[in-house]
Length: 418
Ligand code: HGY
Ligand code: MN
Ligand code: MN
Image (cartoon, rainbow, N blue to C red; front, top):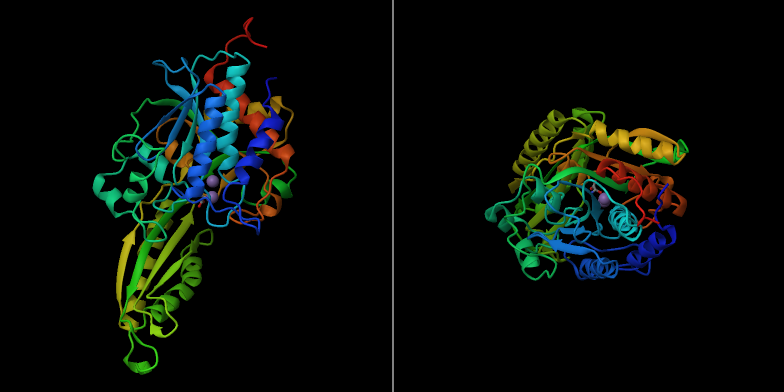
Protein backbone atom coordinates (compact mmCIF):
# COMPACT_ATOMS: atom_id res chain seq x y z
CA UNK A 1 0.00 0.00 0.00
CA UNK A 2 1.15 3.51 -0.71
CA UNK A 3 2.18 5.34 2.44
CA UNK A 4 3.18 8.83 3.39
CA UNK A 5 6.76 9.79 4.20
CA UNK A 6 6.38 9.69 7.98
CA UNK A 7 9.75 11.31 8.72
CA UNK A 8 8.99 14.24 6.40
CA UNK A 9 5.54 14.67 7.91
CA UNK A 10 7.00 14.74 11.42
CA UNK A 11 9.71 17.20 10.38
CA UNK A 12 7.08 19.46 8.83
CA UNK A 13 4.87 19.41 11.91
CA UNK A 14 7.88 20.18 14.10
CA UNK A 15 8.90 23.09 11.84
CA UNK A 16 5.38 24.46 11.77
CA UNK A 17 5.02 23.89 15.51
CA UNK A 18 7.96 26.22 16.14
CA UNK A 19 6.15 29.11 14.40
CA UNK A 20 4.39 31.25 16.97
CA UNK A 21 5.59 29.11 19.87
CA UNK A 22 5.99 30.78 23.27
CA UNK A 23 8.69 29.89 25.77
CA UNK A 24 5.90 28.27 27.83
CA UNK A 25 5.17 25.79 25.01
CA UNK A 26 1.88 27.16 23.67
CA UNK A 27 1.47 28.40 20.11
CA UNK A 28 -0.23 31.63 19.07
CA UNK A 29 -0.76 31.78 15.33
CA UNK A 30 -4.09 33.54 15.10
CA UNK A 31 -5.51 34.34 11.67
CA UNK A 32 -3.71 37.01 9.61
CA UNK A 33 -1.13 37.64 12.36
CA UNK A 34 2.63 37.87 11.72
CA UNK A 35 2.89 34.25 12.90
CA UNK A 36 0.15 33.11 10.51
CA UNK A 37 2.08 34.93 7.76
CA UNK A 38 5.24 33.02 8.67
CA UNK A 39 3.31 29.74 8.55
CA UNK A 40 1.80 30.59 5.15
CA UNK A 41 5.23 31.54 3.85
CA UNK A 42 6.62 28.22 5.00
CA UNK A 43 3.70 26.36 3.45
CA UNK A 44 4.10 28.20 0.15
CA UNK A 45 7.82 27.34 0.10
CA UNK A 46 7.04 23.66 0.72
CA UNK A 47 4.61 23.70 -2.19
CA UNK A 48 7.22 25.28 -4.43
CA UNK A 49 9.87 22.78 -3.30
CA UNK A 50 7.50 19.96 -4.19
CA UNK A 51 6.69 21.46 -7.62
CA UNK A 52 3.04 22.06 -6.71
CA UNK A 53 0.84 24.92 -7.90
CA UNK A 54 -0.66 27.30 -5.35
CA UNK A 55 -3.71 29.51 -5.90
CA UNK A 56 -5.35 31.96 -3.51
CA UNK A 57 -8.77 33.49 -3.13
CA UNK A 58 -9.91 36.81 -1.70
CA UNK A 59 -10.17 35.48 1.87
CA UNK A 60 -6.69 33.97 1.78
CA UNK A 61 -7.82 30.38 1.34
CA UNK A 62 -4.96 28.46 -0.32
CA UNK A 63 -5.52 25.78 -2.97
CA UNK A 64 -2.70 23.45 -3.95
CA UNK A 65 -2.67 21.24 -7.00
CA UNK A 66 -0.38 19.06 -9.06
CA UNK A 67 0.60 20.92 -12.24
CA UNK A 68 -1.43 19.78 -15.20
CA UNK A 69 -3.76 17.66 -13.09
CA UNK A 70 -6.69 20.07 -12.69
CA UNK A 71 -8.64 20.20 -15.98
CA UNK A 72 -12.43 20.09 -16.10
CA UNK A 73 -13.04 17.16 -13.75
CA UNK A 74 -14.19 17.99 -10.20
CA UNK A 75 -11.47 17.01 -7.78
CA UNK A 76 -11.08 15.36 -4.39
CA UNK A 77 -9.96 17.95 -1.88
CA UNK A 78 -8.38 17.60 1.52
CA UNK A 79 -7.13 20.15 4.00
CA UNK A 80 -7.50 22.02 7.25
CA UNK A 81 -6.07 25.19 8.78
CA UNK A 82 -2.74 26.71 9.86
CA UNK A 83 -4.15 29.25 12.32
CA UNK A 84 -4.41 28.45 16.03
CA UNK A 85 -6.31 29.77 19.02
CA UNK A 86 -4.24 31.99 21.35
CA UNK A 87 -1.84 29.76 23.27
CA UNK A 88 -3.02 26.64 21.45
CA UNK A 89 -1.30 23.44 20.38
CA UNK A 90 0.73 22.11 17.46
CA UNK A 91 -1.74 19.65 15.94
CA UNK A 92 -5.18 21.28 15.68
CA UNK A 93 -5.44 22.21 11.99
CA UNK A 94 -1.71 21.81 11.33
CA UNK A 95 -1.99 18.03 11.08
CA UNK A 96 -4.70 18.09 8.42
CA UNK A 97 -3.08 20.91 6.44
CA UNK A 98 0.35 19.30 6.36
CA UNK A 99 -0.99 15.76 5.77
CA UNK A 100 -2.99 17.00 2.76
CA UNK A 101 0.19 18.52 1.35
CA UNK A 102 2.04 15.28 2.05
CA UNK A 103 -0.62 13.35 0.09
CA UNK A 104 -0.05 15.58 -2.94
CA UNK A 105 3.71 15.22 -2.63
CA UNK A 106 3.41 11.41 -2.50
CA UNK A 107 1.03 11.30 -5.44
CA UNK A 108 3.37 13.47 -7.48
CA UNK A 109 6.66 11.83 -6.57
CA UNK A 110 5.31 8.30 -7.04
CA UNK A 111 3.68 9.25 -10.34
CA UNK A 112 0.29 7.96 -9.21
CA UNK A 113 -2.55 8.63 -11.66
CA UNK A 114 -6.09 9.30 -10.47
CA UNK A 115 -9.33 9.77 -12.39
CA UNK A 116 -10.07 12.92 -10.41
CA UNK A 117 -7.46 15.54 -9.55
CA UNK A 118 -6.45 15.76 -5.90
CA UNK A 119 -6.11 19.13 -4.19
CA UNK A 120 -4.95 20.37 -0.80
CA UNK A 121 -6.64 23.34 0.86
CA UNK A 122 -5.65 25.65 3.71
CA UNK A 123 -8.67 27.51 5.06
CA UNK A 124 -8.31 30.99 6.54
CA UNK A 125 -9.28 31.80 10.11
CA UNK A 126 -10.79 28.44 11.01
CA UNK A 127 -10.55 29.42 14.65
CA UNK A 128 -12.92 32.30 14.06
CA UNK A 129 -10.95 35.31 15.23
CA UNK A 130 -13.01 37.33 12.75
CA UNK A 131 -15.80 34.89 11.90
CA UNK A 132 -16.59 31.28 12.77
CA UNK A 133 -14.90 29.05 10.14
CA UNK A 134 -14.35 32.20 8.09
CA UNK A 135 -12.57 30.81 5.02
CA UNK A 136 -14.73 27.74 4.45
CA UNK A 137 -17.91 29.73 5.06
CA UNK A 138 -16.66 32.02 2.31
CA UNK A 139 -16.44 29.00 0.01
CA UNK A 140 -19.85 27.65 1.02
CA UNK A 141 -21.99 30.77 1.26
CA UNK A 142 -19.77 33.78 0.55
CA UNK A 143 -19.95 37.13 2.34
CA UNK A 144 -21.29 40.43 1.12
CA UNK A 145 -18.96 43.43 1.26
CA UNK A 146 -21.22 44.78 4.00
CA UNK A 147 -20.91 41.62 6.12
CA UNK A 148 -17.14 41.65 5.69
CA UNK A 149 -17.02 45.29 6.74
CA UNK A 150 -18.62 44.40 10.08
CA UNK A 151 -16.27 41.59 11.08
CA UNK A 152 -13.72 42.45 13.74
CA UNK A 153 -11.12 40.37 15.55
CA UNK A 154 -10.87 39.85 19.27
CA UNK A 155 -8.53 42.83 19.43
CA UNK A 156 -11.15 45.03 17.79
CA UNK A 157 -9.25 45.21 14.48
CA UNK A 158 -11.21 45.02 11.23
CA UNK A 159 -11.05 41.98 8.96
CA UNK A 160 -11.02 44.14 5.82
CA UNK A 161 -7.90 45.93 7.08
CA UNK A 162 -6.21 42.63 7.91
CA UNK A 163 -7.01 41.29 4.44
CA UNK A 164 -5.85 44.44 2.68
CA UNK A 165 -2.40 43.92 4.18
CA UNK A 166 -2.35 40.13 3.62
CA UNK A 167 -0.03 38.90 0.82
CA UNK A 168 -1.73 35.47 0.62
CA UNK A 169 -5.05 36.71 -0.74
CA UNK A 170 -6.02 37.45 -4.28
CA UNK A 171 -9.23 38.83 -5.72
CA UNK A 172 -12.32 40.07 -3.95
CA UNK A 173 -13.12 38.65 -0.48
CA UNK A 174 -16.78 39.00 -1.43
CA UNK A 175 -16.38 36.60 -4.37
CA UNK A 176 -15.09 33.39 -2.85
CA UNK A 177 -18.22 31.28 -3.06
CA UNK A 178 -17.67 28.05 -4.97
CA UNK A 179 -20.01 26.73 -7.63
CA UNK A 180 -22.14 23.62 -7.09
CA UNK A 181 -19.75 21.18 -8.75
CA UNK A 182 -16.41 22.71 -7.81
CA UNK A 183 -15.31 19.54 -6.06
CA UNK A 184 -16.31 15.88 -5.99
CA UNK A 185 -15.48 15.08 -2.37
CA UNK A 186 -13.75 16.53 0.68
CA UNK A 187 -11.93 14.74 3.50
CA UNK A 188 -10.16 16.29 6.50
CA UNK A 189 -7.72 14.65 8.89
CA UNK A 190 -7.84 16.13 12.41
CA UNK A 191 -6.96 15.30 15.97
CA UNK A 192 -9.99 14.20 18.00
CA UNK A 193 -9.57 16.97 20.61
CA UNK A 194 -11.45 14.75 23.06
CA UNK A 195 -10.67 11.61 25.09
CA UNK A 196 -12.68 8.84 23.42
CA UNK A 197 -10.21 7.27 20.98
CA UNK A 198 -7.43 7.17 23.55
CA UNK A 199 -9.75 5.74 26.22
CA UNK A 200 -10.90 2.95 23.92
CA UNK A 201 -7.39 2.39 22.49
CA UNK A 202 -8.71 2.92 18.97
CA UNK A 203 -6.43 4.10 16.15
CA UNK A 204 -8.89 5.90 13.91
CA UNK A 205 -12.19 7.75 14.36
CA UNK A 206 -14.52 7.71 11.37
CA UNK A 207 -16.46 10.90 11.98
CA UNK A 208 -20.23 10.50 11.74
CA UNK A 209 -21.37 14.10 12.26
CA UNK A 210 -20.24 17.55 13.38
CA UNK A 211 -21.92 19.62 16.06
CA UNK A 212 -24.00 22.77 15.38
CA UNK A 213 -22.29 26.07 16.28
CA UNK A 214 -23.97 29.25 17.43
CA UNK A 215 -22.42 32.46 18.70
CA UNK A 216 -22.76 36.15 19.34
CA UNK A 217 -20.79 39.26 20.22
CA UNK A 218 -22.40 41.42 22.85
CA UNK A 219 -21.63 44.65 24.63
CA UNK A 220 -22.93 45.93 27.93
CA UNK A 221 -22.77 49.71 27.74
CA UNK A 222 -22.88 51.68 30.97
CA UNK A 223 -21.03 54.80 31.98
CA UNK A 224 -17.35 55.33 32.75
CA UNK A 225 -16.87 57.31 35.96
CA UNK A 226 -14.31 58.04 38.65
CA UNK A 227 -13.79 54.96 40.83
CA UNK A 228 -13.11 57.09 43.90
CA UNK A 229 -15.84 59.68 43.74
CA UNK A 230 -18.86 57.91 42.22
CA UNK A 231 -21.12 56.46 44.96
CA UNK A 232 -22.06 52.80 44.55
CA UNK A 233 -25.71 53.59 43.93
CA UNK A 234 -24.93 56.17 41.23
CA UNK A 235 -22.98 53.84 38.94
CA UNK A 236 -23.76 52.19 35.60
CA UNK A 237 -21.03 49.58 35.86
CA UNK A 238 -20.88 47.56 32.64
CA UNK A 239 -18.58 44.93 34.14
CA UNK A 240 -20.88 44.18 37.06
CA UNK A 241 -23.70 43.63 34.55
CA UNK A 242 -21.55 41.47 32.26
CA UNK A 243 -20.29 39.38 35.19
CA UNK A 244 -23.84 38.79 36.41
CA UNK A 245 -24.82 37.59 32.91
CA UNK A 246 -21.75 35.36 32.49
CA UNK A 247 -22.25 33.75 35.89
CA UNK A 248 -25.75 32.64 34.84
CA UNK A 249 -24.69 31.01 31.54
CA UNK A 250 -24.01 27.46 32.87
CA UNK A 251 -27.38 27.14 34.57
CA UNK A 252 -29.23 28.46 31.52
CA UNK A 253 -27.37 26.11 29.17
CA UNK A 254 -27.99 23.04 31.34
CA UNK A 255 -31.68 23.90 31.49
CA UNK A 256 -31.93 24.05 27.69
CA UNK A 257 -30.24 20.71 26.92
CA UNK A 258 -28.05 18.18 28.71
CA UNK A 259 -25.75 17.98 25.65
CA UNK A 260 -25.20 21.64 24.93
CA UNK A 261 -22.23 23.75 25.94
CA UNK A 262 -22.01 27.54 26.15
CA UNK A 263 -18.90 29.63 26.73
CA UNK A 264 -17.97 33.26 27.15
CA UNK A 265 -14.33 33.01 26.00
CA UNK A 266 -13.28 36.63 26.17
CA UNK A 267 -14.32 39.97 27.60
CA UNK A 268 -12.85 43.37 26.88
CA UNK A 269 -13.32 45.96 29.58
CA UNK A 270 -13.27 49.61 28.51
CA UNK A 271 -11.49 51.77 29.32
CA UNK A 272 -9.79 49.09 31.43
CA UNK A 273 -8.16 51.09 34.23
CA UNK A 274 -8.14 50.23 37.93
CA UNK A 275 -9.49 53.64 38.93
CA UNK A 276 -12.31 53.91 36.36
CA UNK A 277 -15.79 52.39 36.69
CA UNK A 278 -16.05 50.17 33.57
CA UNK A 279 -18.07 51.99 30.90
CA UNK A 280 -18.37 49.17 28.39
CA UNK A 281 -17.71 45.43 28.30
CA UNK A 282 -17.60 43.39 25.09
CA UNK A 283 -18.12 39.63 25.40
CA UNK A 284 -17.95 36.67 23.05
CA UNK A 285 -20.42 33.79 23.19
CA UNK A 286 -19.89 30.33 21.70
CA UNK A 287 -22.59 27.68 22.09
CA UNK A 288 -22.92 24.20 20.64
CA UNK A 289 -25.26 21.25 20.47
CA UNK A 290 -25.88 18.42 18.00
CA UNK A 291 -29.35 19.86 17.33
CA UNK A 292 -30.03 23.09 15.39
CA UNK A 293 -33.32 23.68 17.25
CA UNK A 294 -31.42 23.67 20.56
CA UNK A 295 -28.93 26.23 19.20
CA UNK A 296 -31.77 28.48 18.09
CA UNK A 297 -33.40 28.22 21.52
CA UNK A 298 -30.08 28.83 23.27
CA UNK A 299 -29.54 31.94 21.15
CA UNK A 300 -32.99 33.28 22.04
CA UNK A 301 -32.68 32.44 25.75
CA UNK A 302 -29.17 33.86 26.10
CA UNK A 303 -30.22 37.10 24.42
CA UNK A 304 -33.32 37.40 26.62
CA UNK A 305 -31.22 36.79 29.73
CA UNK A 306 -28.62 39.35 28.61
CA UNK A 307 -31.37 41.95 28.05
CA UNK A 308 -32.94 41.31 31.45
CA UNK A 309 -29.57 41.47 33.17
CA UNK A 310 -28.68 44.73 31.41
CA UNK A 311 -32.00 46.24 32.41
CA UNK A 312 -31.56 45.19 36.03
CA UNK A 313 -28.18 46.93 36.13
CA UNK A 314 -29.32 50.03 34.25
CA UNK A 315 -27.00 49.50 31.29
CA UNK A 316 -27.68 49.05 27.57
CA UNK A 317 -27.18 45.78 25.70
CA UNK A 318 -25.90 45.51 22.12
CA UNK A 319 -26.35 42.00 20.72
CA UNK A 320 -24.87 40.84 17.39
CA UNK A 321 -25.53 37.18 16.58
CA UNK A 322 -22.91 35.27 14.55
CA UNK A 323 -23.85 33.11 11.59
CA UNK A 324 -25.11 29.75 12.88
CA UNK A 325 -23.17 26.85 11.41
CA UNK A 326 -25.67 23.99 11.15
CA UNK A 327 -24.83 20.45 12.29
CA UNK A 328 -23.90 18.15 9.47
CA UNK A 329 -23.78 14.41 9.04
CA UNK A 330 -20.68 13.18 7.28
CA UNK A 331 -21.38 11.54 3.93
CA UNK A 332 -21.75 7.76 3.89
CA UNK A 333 -19.54 7.45 0.83
CA UNK A 334 -16.61 9.16 2.55
CA UNK A 335 -17.21 7.37 5.87
CA UNK A 336 -17.07 4.08 3.94
CA UNK A 337 -13.85 5.09 2.17
CA UNK A 338 -12.22 6.06 5.49
CA UNK A 339 -13.35 2.81 7.15
CA UNK A 340 -12.09 0.71 4.24
CA UNK A 341 -8.77 2.57 4.24
CA UNK A 342 -8.33 1.95 7.97
CA UNK A 343 -9.20 -1.74 7.53
CA UNK A 344 -6.77 -2.08 4.68
CA UNK A 345 -4.02 -0.59 6.84
CA UNK A 346 -4.90 -2.95 9.70
CA UNK A 347 -5.90 -0.11 12.03
CA UNK A 348 -8.72 -0.28 14.57
CA UNK A 349 -11.54 2.19 14.02
CA UNK A 350 -14.78 3.45 15.49
CA UNK A 351 -17.55 5.80 14.50
CA UNK A 352 -17.38 9.10 16.42
CA UNK A 353 -19.24 12.43 16.49
CA UNK A 354 -17.28 15.69 16.55
CA UNK A 355 -17.98 18.19 19.33
CA UNK A 356 -15.52 20.64 17.81
CA UNK A 357 -16.33 22.68 14.74
CA UNK A 358 -14.44 22.09 11.51
CA UNK A 359 -14.24 23.49 7.99
CA UNK A 360 -15.66 20.14 6.89
CA UNK A 361 -19.07 21.25 8.07
CA UNK A 362 -19.07 23.98 5.45
CA UNK A 363 -17.52 21.78 2.79
CA UNK A 364 -20.26 19.20 3.39
CA UNK A 365 -22.66 21.63 1.69
CA UNK A 366 -20.53 21.58 -1.43
CA UNK A 367 -19.69 17.89 -1.85
CA UNK A 368 -19.73 14.53 -0.03
CA UNK A 369 -17.49 15.16 2.98
CA UNK A 370 -15.92 13.12 5.76
CA UNK A 371 -13.35 13.39 8.52
CA UNK A 372 -10.68 11.16 10.02
CA UNK A 373 -9.81 11.56 13.72
CA UNK A 374 -6.68 10.38 15.50
CA UNK A 375 -6.30 10.19 19.29
CA UNK A 376 -5.52 13.24 21.41
CA UNK A 377 -3.56 12.35 24.55
CA UNK A 378 -5.72 13.10 27.57
CA UNK A 379 -8.29 14.60 25.21
CA UNK A 380 -6.50 17.94 25.59
CA UNK A 381 -6.79 20.60 22.89
CA UNK A 382 -6.92 24.40 22.48
CA UNK A 383 -4.14 24.27 25.03
CA UNK A 384 -0.36 23.86 25.02
CA UNK A 385 -1.00 20.37 26.43
CA UNK A 386 -2.37 19.22 23.06
CA UNK A 387 -0.44 16.12 21.96
CA UNK A 388 -0.80 13.27 19.50
CA UNK A 389 1.76 10.46 19.25
CA UNK A 390 3.83 10.31 16.05
CA UNK A 391 2.54 6.81 15.36
CA UNK A 392 -1.02 8.17 15.39
CA UNK A 393 -0.01 11.11 13.20
CA UNK A 394 1.42 8.65 10.67
CA UNK A 395 -1.60 6.34 10.89
CA UNK A 396 -3.96 9.23 10.27
CA UNK A 397 -1.98 10.51 7.30
CA UNK A 398 -1.80 7.01 5.78
CA UNK A 399 -5.56 6.66 6.15
CA UNK A 400 -5.98 10.10 4.58
CA UNK A 401 -3.81 9.17 1.59
CA UNK A 402 -5.62 5.85 1.09
CA UNK A 403 -9.01 7.56 1.41
CA UNK A 404 -8.13 10.29 -1.06
CA UNK A 405 -6.85 7.70 -3.55
CA UNK A 406 -10.05 5.68 -3.20
CA UNK A 407 -12.24 8.72 -3.70
CA UNK A 408 -10.16 10.05 -6.57
CA UNK A 409 -10.14 6.71 -8.38
CA UNK A 410 -6.57 5.55 -8.38
CA UNK A 411 -5.60 4.24 -11.78
CA UNK A 412 -3.93 0.85 -12.12
CA UNK A 413 -0.20 1.07 -11.43
CA UNK A 414 1.61 2.42 -14.48
CA UNK A 415 5.22 1.82 -15.46
CA UNK A 416 6.03 5.31 -14.24
CA UNK A 417 4.87 4.61 -10.70
CA UNK A 418 7.50 3.51 -8.27
O1 HGY B 1 -13.70 25.92 17.88
C1 HGY B 1 -13.69 24.81 17.35
O2 HGY B 1 -14.46 23.92 17.58
C2 HGY B 1 -12.61 24.46 16.36
O3 HGY B 1 -11.49 24.05 17.00
N1 HGY B 1 -12.41 25.47 15.43
MN1 MN C 1 -9.41 24.52 17.04
MN1 MN D 1 -9.14 22.55 13.95
